Length: 234
Image (cartoon, rainbow, N blue to C red; front, side):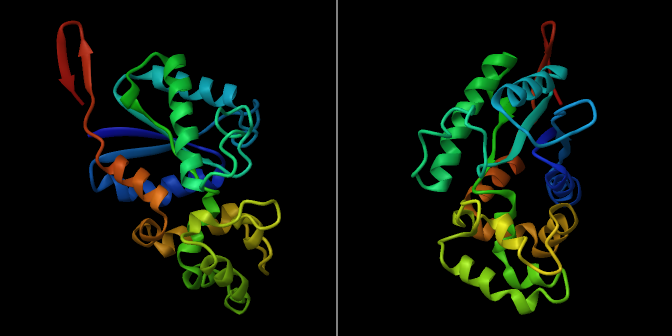
């Protein structure tokens, strides 16, 4: 049995982890649960900067020494306090995400002072909504009327090698394209439903950075925990 905490950026990611990712991982005895970072006493998710993320993840890792922690955070709009965000501009999306992940891993482990294998950072290029572009037809089945508006989405998908390359400008990022649909695309309402209908197999087929992350989670070994001079496997 492996316990995994997935630190998400907002309620959409929280629902996706609970309703889509966790059931799939449980087939491999990986038990995933979502957490959102508290940004105030009343609010969770959003407004993420390096200091807040590092502290939250570090404290989560310190709670128990028999859990893994990973992240589901967007590359698009990522705060420039995260190392690598600024000087990786112009690089391929997956390469940018991988570099920021590497640096975030260093920052969190230095703060938490835990075994490095317990933290698996994941930065999603360009954003969580890009996963919906794995299957435009299925996405547009979520709401009646969306199929008639699918042409721009199909064109956006066909313009890139994979959905994770979809443009990250404030006008044409995946979420901005979806918000132009009528009835309007609502992240929390439509996002997890669309992901469930598309399915993780289809998403993994078309989104290589996400696939690498998922495959790594599926293969997580049980952690060995030391109590005095005795080592146990959880």
